[in-house]
Image (tube, rainbow, N blue to C red; front, side, top):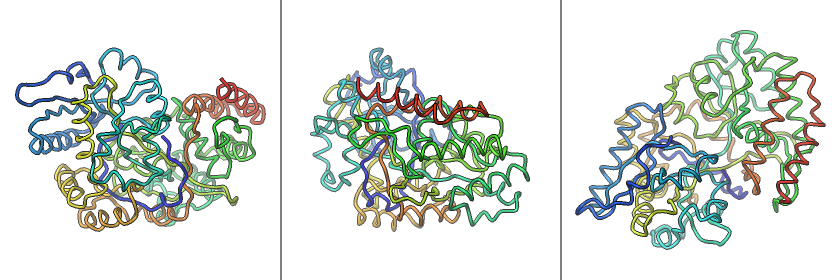
Length: 458
């Protein structure tokens, strides 16, 4: 997931956050290409992921019903779906994609270049707010040809999620989370000693290991690629520093536990079950923890990600683009953009729409107010924020370290070239460090840099 660097993005939005990336449904795009009587056009839309609670599914269906009431010529069918880069092309070829779905910022340009998602420029330009996007955010929805391939959504910055209950059990103050990496290490060690649970864990597989190692590198002031995406810089002092810290937490402090095989879904599950003290993830993860993992809200805390002392430190930022299948008809593409405007974007710019969605979410006991970063300008965000305040039901008082601290943190985009392939290379580095006490970190980074450079030069 990728956005261009811009300090203005550090302004925090707490707009209602709906279901995240969902899993593939048997109801694919082949169905969505048929018209249904006098309804005119029918589309399938990404709705929820497998394992989401019934209330989440019901909330999406209510939104679809409200949309169809306003747009009698469009039939909307929400389905399960999940972004998976390794199967996307097969799903497209087999007509197994919804008409519209979210893809990571980092993949939008590649999908556009391969003509796997539709050019929706004319439909986006026709929206009344098309000129009010934060340019850095809208850039993530554009292809290299400058055309627009979807609506940017779910913009986030990485924070440090922590378990307030484990902090209390370890004798730590849950209202005073760690502000430096030395404090993270010390608190993790204490949590492990006092509670028997890992004080800190790190994702390692399915490209999440590389994603989080890049996050740690940014926090310490390093980079994985040159800004133009032509030169690999994996073998840098900050990445080595971060890996050495992970090594020492794993093998010296014994504060990371023995499970070194976490991905996004499994780390969320473990955290919600009270088996993780701290971990890095997007600031919007609370919604998923509630809707999929049934986390106890009283145990959740979100802190600003600790940064190093250098001038180039910052937090990794990203998001999703609500794209449209390349196999959609023009009528379906227009309907899909209209749906995404209603379901995903309106809550970010229209106070009335934000409140209307918030009421539906609250009626289904869904989170309202999960921290996210603004898609539009500061004035637009403030209007929505003010309207939403009475409806917020997330424990924002447990997230003040993040909501206050993120204003002072530089937001840095993910590596621009071969992002997921680079993350895959880095996965193996993280795994080796966490499974082999005698791993040669310097050699691992040297070899990974060579592999990354081959990718960038191909």
